[in-house]
Image 1 (cartoon, one colour):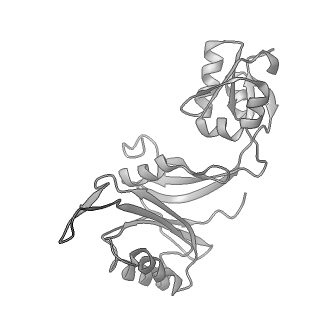
Image 2 (tube, rainbow, N blue to C red):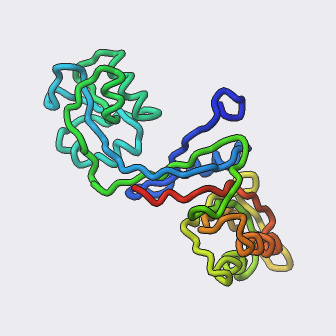
Length: 250
């Protein structure tokens, strides 16, 4: 929708403090020509929703996004309900409201309950009260970085196989005292498996990877610019996904 100019921005969940990285969305960052222009960290408050007048004991199944179902496993197991996956929490709430099936509940937000006319049967049902999800804000044009507040830069790169290749790549940040806040590896799907067979008998197989890095520096800083210049010397592919203000509030 952003690429087609239907909307100005998109908000994409990228990692959760309880369940880790959302790998599918890392892949989407590379598939689309969008720029990260911000990040938001939100504390989860999962609610169990049902049709008006329904009690928790009447529920036979609960529908929601797989992440939400996983994050509320204890409560759902105690209720003994079937867990049904849906594409997201809001759609799950809408599905329950439209189908009007009394024995089906949804895990979604209190706002979703308000929008779709559902009752909140229980609030804050996540297993971990400190459950925080980090979201990325994406836009067509990059944000012009500044120095008025702490900034973060996200990049993705791939390496040629060789001893210490990843160490050499990461050392460009260490030698400039640039803190890495996140590193994630994903298979390089265009070239997922290589077979090396030189003078040796047999073959050696290994995977090629993309490395996603978040580092705490603005692209306006010379140390960040110099780090990327040196990084280009040791990588086979490099793309800056965005430079944006850090969200330090939860």
